Length: 205
Image (cartoon, rainbow, N blue to C red):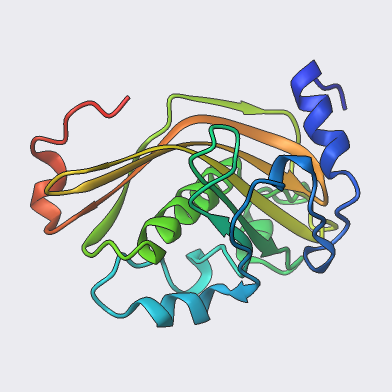
């Protein structure tokens, strides 16, 4: 696999991560003020029923949160690291594709959106969470059934609070320590009611 200069730096920084349980702190994470080492369901239970929710069942991609902070990250405004354990018997490998199983790339972006929604929920924001977009994507690898762990990393750019809340972040997805997806301007909002999600959101960039 070929990498650009920035992708190669990230790949080298994280290539020692072989499984979800072997996450290493590297220089990019040194500014984090808080380390959370808990499973996602425990964290969701702690925020209560009125907070933004994650999908359940097969569409909940996140298992574990090693790191989360309001500081640190590329922009000094917060960083999130979540993980998904890869099960070779997962539903998407059975249908995407026959005799050529790979995880759909859109699920990697879904994992980043779920991670950003979890960040807002743990900050105490109440309401209905909605993914609002992403400005650019780059796929440079894929997830096979032989993989062990996906890691979703977010660098918070800003959180805008009005009658609603919108978070903006850049993200990366790594499989067993190798950078495979990059996303710019991921956006997730939390709204008091679903109908408000399409009204007067404004431009948060």
